[in-house]
Amino acid sequence: EQDILNGLSLKNKTVLITAGPTYEAIDPVRFIGNHSSGKMGFELAKAAANLGAEVILITGPTHQTVNHSLITIIPVVSAQEMYEATHLHFNNSDIAILSAAVADYKPKNVATQKIKKKDSTLTLELEKTKDILASLGQIKTNQFLVGFALETNNELEHAKLKLKKKNLDLIVLNSLNDKGAGFKSDTNKVTLINKAEQITVFELKSKTEVATDIFNTIIKTIHA
Ligand code: CTP
Ligand code: CA
Image 1: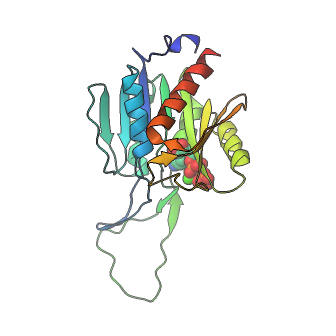
Image 2: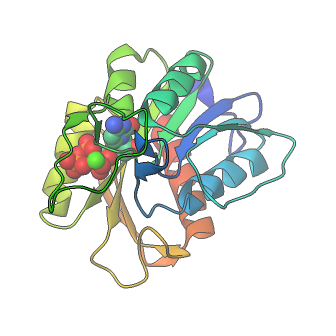
Image 3: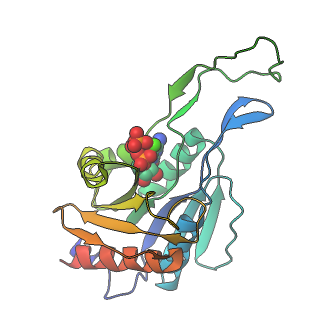
């Protein structure tokens, strides 16, 4: 891991990033989704490319756009598609940052025809999706693996648990409690926790600046 970065540059390094929400089909016209805008992931991709990295950006459905010669966008829709695309590129990556808001559950059966309105209640059976981040934590070799944690209570405790459980090198705790932070906002308030459980608290700032903070911390951690 010592040699992964030359100074403050990511030249000759490949950074894998997941971004945005996933959509889980219910029937041909409906899905279960979430409000993730994809902004944080796209800002991470731009920051990495500006540091000279080759970037693979695997993104769920968003309105974000980016045009950079070093960024390859791989659009996906469902958690399963994101899982497959991420695994396809993980072996060739030096750093993987999983910022996507992946659905935790998906409909167990996808109706082939539009579900008709009938009774006063409708029950959908859901099953767990695969945890992409945890699966990478189990197979990683030299990759520096970064996860996000979205928490509303006992934030530090929950984030530290995720860091350990998913075998991460760094976790970005996203505080939804703060005004101006989170899903749809242009700003974010994050706390970074590394493997040694060293905690760095950052102020509320633009997602562009948060992306820079994250890469500075990754570089520092790798060189420590
Ligand atoms: N993640 C993932 N695949 C999933 C679910 C989550 O890769 N199926 C990743 C997210 O991209 C994020 C991290 O896991 O980097 C944590 O996501 P989060 O929703 O905060 O945690 P979960 O482990 O899903 O637990 P919970 O939602 O119950 O807090
Ligand atoms: Ca989750």
